[in-house]
Length: 208
Image (cartoon, rainbow, N blue to C red):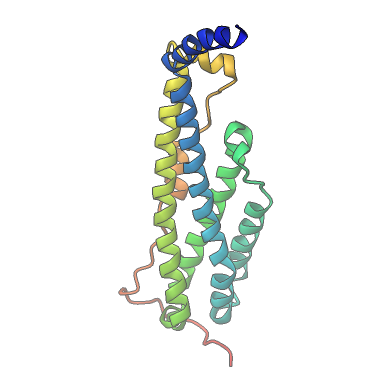
């Protein structure tokens, strides 16, 4: 008898949940998590390039201590942030994460601009390879971040729209933070170094 009652009430319950957007919210929440994981993966890829890039530049341009220090410190700051899946549910932590990544992106851009003054560095095969990897990674970051933006927008619209907003409130689903236009301007632009242009005179040779 009890089983029959449960079966009788289970079917309407399933229909009610599906009709009020519960399944859609769950699906979109998982899409946000997957998109966020890819963003973190690409940011980590960039961070992993930094030590080799800094060491290579230092071999030719040790006097650029300020820029090299900026990059090293920015990478260290990124490393102090626990980029867990829960971070996307905390607007303040998310903003802090964005700021740290923006600072690292800016520092790397300045480092590559400085490298223009060192012809021997620009012609070094290791540096050229690292620079190409960095540009490729920046492009991947842009793609991953755009996918995250789209996933969050779809999710946020769903949980703010009636009647799925009632379901979201009941089950504790809240609006997730997203990248802003300012963040797009500061960290989405891949660093560009045009090796075809004439270099400024100067530069110390790499020590033997």
